[in-house]
Amino acid sequence: MAPGIKVVAFSGSLRKGSYNKGLIRSAIELSKGTIEGVEIEYVDISALPMLNTDLEKEGTFPPEVEDFRQKILGADSILFASPEYNYSVTAPLKNAIDWASRPPNVWAGKPAAIVSAGGGHGGAKSHYHLRQIGVFLDLHFINKPEFFLNAFQPPAKFNSDGDLIDEEAKNTLKEIIVSLKKFTLLLQGKN
Image (tube, rainbow, N blue to C red):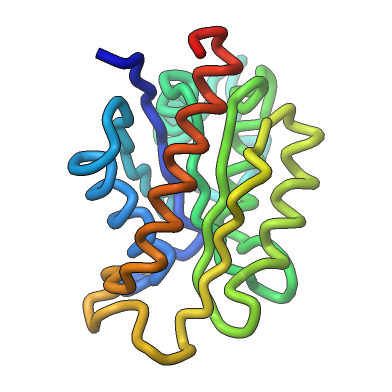
């Protein structure tokens, strides 16, 4: 059996019917069906308080922040579903990133991938800002393939529940997950 990896996935959108959450659901389905050796866990960031260092007491974090940080520490790699807001990442995603970067930085050394769905360029500008943030945090992003999905261009990419239905997009998402697995194993010295 091939070595496996554990991936934690976050969506920068808190909206119930978010297409970015739909990408994560699809990635989870793919990891259970057609990609061997990948376990993906969705972690909801909506309960995280806004970053406020006054909430840190004697080297401890609020319980929901500590739980979030432990999920990252327990993962081999990270999958970000990052919508684009005002040419950048969303406030909830940046808040989550900032909480996990508080000393000790739990992002350090983790391989990561980014996917996005939205209008226009499909969230592409958020990728570039997230990559810039990742440089400082010592996150290691895969370079290719890239995944920017224009969710509003026909034919339909998502159903009314926000689930990904476009087969071409699913194939590209699968390529992202396979690339993340290979890169993770390479960085771990297992490939």
